[in-house]
Length: 336
Image (tube, rainbow, N blue to C red; front, side, top):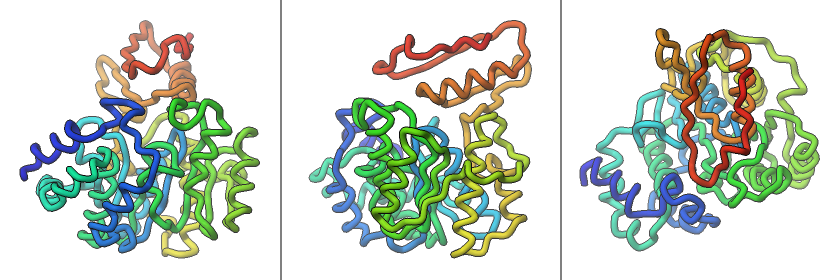
């Protein structure tokens, strides 16, 4: 099966959240467990870092991957969603998965995929794990798709779990309160595996502490520590929180893997160059100045508008796309 045919199959013939919404969400790990079995438990063949949260998990994942790459590790990176090309989701050292591997994977497992009818995301996870194992990566940074507890990525046993922050998002699936969403995100915390929390929040901190205590896992809050500011290609003001989360995570990983200061500084400085990250306060054009950002929920939009208030302009034009379940009245997008 050719690449285009394979992608068409997994994006149009199977449940796809970006197209169908919550009906495509599989609130179970059964499918990924079966897919994992047919790939000979690929996820067990490399080390992982698991990243969840409402906002910032994509930036944190790319920053971590960039640092590991600078250190010389063959580094896998699984993120979602993609902006232009499906292959953006699965990278090794910044290079997208090959079209041939995608086509061969779907061809090899086509009958099982038709029988099982997994979601688009579940196939993407299995594909990523199989690719990373086949390419013998040293370590992979794995971003949660949605939630955590029942997310298809949650079969891994990482070196460290990371939860960036909690805000209202996907409330029809994860719950309509910060506390309920935090419970779902806390589902990635594993027994005796350290967990990093990016931000202390009054509604969530007690929940995370209790979950970590229950599982005998050390818990670290990134905003408890004052970290140095490093130059970074990501220019959004909100990246300060993400960089602190990354530095706290790296401090934990350094107990298990050799990561030097030069790799940390270069990895943060060259994150876009190394990983191809797009859509984070991205300069699309200089004259006229056009910026693009993927902020898409209440907390994300708040951060974008805070940054807009620091910009100088005579006229501000906003082009804003959203899915139909969001309400425009939810957000105050005034930058005045």
